[in-house]
Image (tube, rainbow, N blue to C red):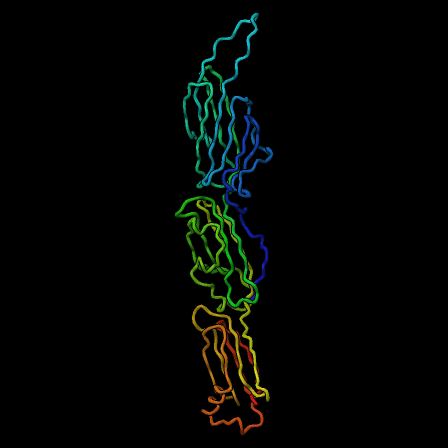
Length: 359
């Protein structure tokens, strides 16, 4: 069985790398920067390409986003405008009243509202984004001070919480098809972080719910489906392993791994020092359903031996052939030449025929 390690585009939907926690980015009021969550495992600032710039730029209001295991924490810091030393010749402005009202919006939905009566105010608001759809989102902060001043700032950002799938195919010499699989989902839930769907060609094999213990762990595919895919019963030729992962926000990634099934049995013949038949060993691709194949031996158009093979090989000895000949009253000693016709059949119907000189 041969496997082609081919990069097939690897994802139909943009890939996801789960969040690397506690990476902090700060945005000053009116900076006009975009942030991407879930891309390359961290919150990334990118140049402003099409995002709406702020109408008010004021250093009194600062907002920053801090990544957490399940989303973001929005941090807002407000400082009242510092008083300037008045010119004695100029009439002094009225004393500013401290405090005001703060509103925090997520995608134009009110997230929180609070009042303060100090010259400085600090707000931290956690936001769980595990269930948010992939795409563009915005956090906005509005402050109405007691003195009638209005301040605003916002951070546009992109969420890409698509799962990330890594497939490591087995090497050609292995007799079983059980590739290593690692799936990385976004989220920190202990119970459920996503769903894995495994199929071969157009046939589904199994659906598996994934918890956080299995998240981002490299394990054999059989760890998820409790058995190896029974490639021994697939037809000869090219096939496709399909692994699809769906996150809890509905985002999906699909990985395609082409592999080749070649179940043709291999035969190894050993002889004694005089060149006489000693043993014939036939290797098979293991089948999950018990029988890997069969072996038939013919002499003069008569089938003298048959056996169902369970496992990955079978060895036929000279003694077993002589016992089979005895049932048909055939004595090897009375024949100068005896030619056996050997047929090895696999679970998926592949046959290999060969002749063996017995003495």
